[in-house]
Image (cartoon, rainbow, N blue to C red; front, top):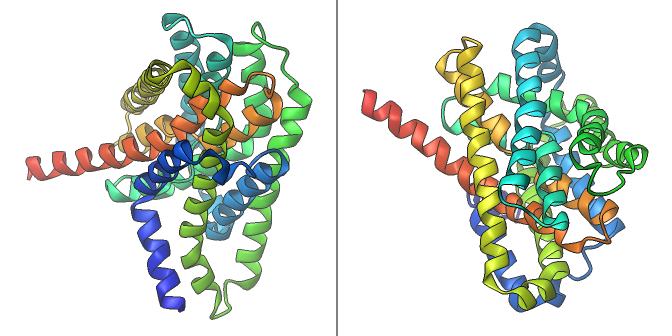
Amino acid sequence: MLKILQGASRWLAQNASLFIIAIAVFTFFVPDTFGWVRGNTQTVILGMIMLTMGLTLTTEDFRILARRPWDILIGACAQFLIMPCVAWLLVRVFHLEPALALGILLVGCCPGGVSSNIMSYLCHGDVAFSVGMTCASTLLAPMMTPLLMELTAGAIIEIDTIGMFLNILIVTIIPVGIGCFLNYTYSHKPSFPTIQSLMPGVSVICLACIVGGVISTVHDALIARGLLLFVWTFGVVFCHNSLGYLLGWTSGRLAGFNTAKKRTISIEVGMQNAGLATVLASTFFAAQPLSVLPCAISCAWHSISGTILAGLFLKWDQRKK
């Protein structure tokens, strides 16, 4: 039974995008399936995702922050400068309505996504740098995300910066801290690696539940406004994500990074923690239900595009050989 669960976890990790899209499509036709994923339930599910991240982090991962301060500083600055600015520009170029604008701005102001570490590994990037960037942006998120939302979206809606700070602290830093503590305390136990091997699958299932909950929430609006709303929103998400990859690579090049680090910073900047954005949108912008749509689309698309980009990097290596 255990081997079956481990195999299922590996399959889910390798096919995360496909699984999430399948859940989204299924929920669109049967919207009541994930109607329960709302409010505090959604927050708890995101906390579980962050707990799985903490269970995979070791003290060595945090030492990277001290050993490579220059790399991490450049990465953190790129993360919290490029994506919010690109989102702000796209809101104006696409003339987005307030609800959709809030969603894409929130995605831009969130920290890097957890799966970015996997993508960096797949494309022969600097995995240690990737883990360090993810740790740094996650630790900075309680302060930076509310501040950046106030700067970019304060004119659209009143931002509860204190509430957002506390919410991010509860659903990210505390679960990650608990996971790290458990890893530090029980990593020597024979059964602990087995538990860790199941975490990728748990994380994917939790993210799929969040996306399913969002589709259930915006289902009626999608039906009422048709395919155009989805296509228009996807276009914004695509541009935001793609420009993040491009400008992330450019920032690495300007910093004089080698190829592995340029690939990593590109992926780290482009892939956001859209699951966190989804929960924040549902919690703080409940009066604007469509604000969760860009976040849900980003959840699925960032995983797809990250896989595609990692594959393109590998093909480039093969051509050079």
